[in-house]
Length: 150
Image (cartoon, rainbow, N blue to C red; front, top):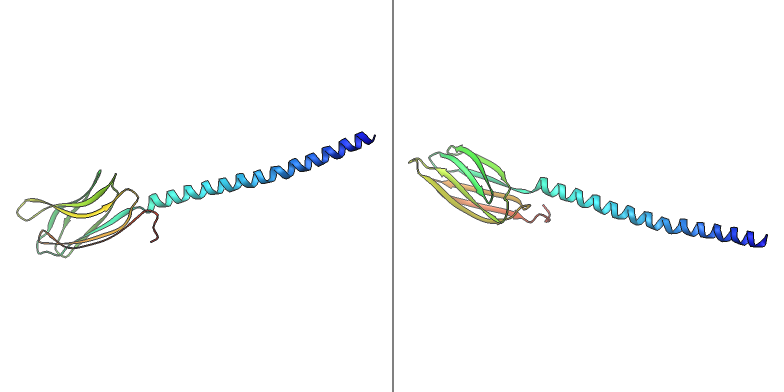
């Protein structure tokens, strides 16, 4: 009888101990799961908010025709930009890149301007460019790393 009571008490204590040791495992699992969810949310936000917003303004006296922005692995057509007008696109390079701008001038010659810069996939920010009579007049760049604050 005493052995049965001791065995019962021992089993009850072991059960309580097992229940107590399972709780930290449950909390650990919940913590890991929460970290994974936050990481996935961060990656999704970074992907949807990445890219560089490029604005081209024609400050010249002639239209810029067939304007195309080039970054590594992609091109973005802006069409014609009349004098005093602007056009824009959000660019997403495939790898390390800079910005180049193609357009046709009034003599039907295709020009390519190197707007410089350095960015990679996931970078974000803005590039504002003014082109006057086929020459870059203003080039302001605010390029940020993917993890930097706005």
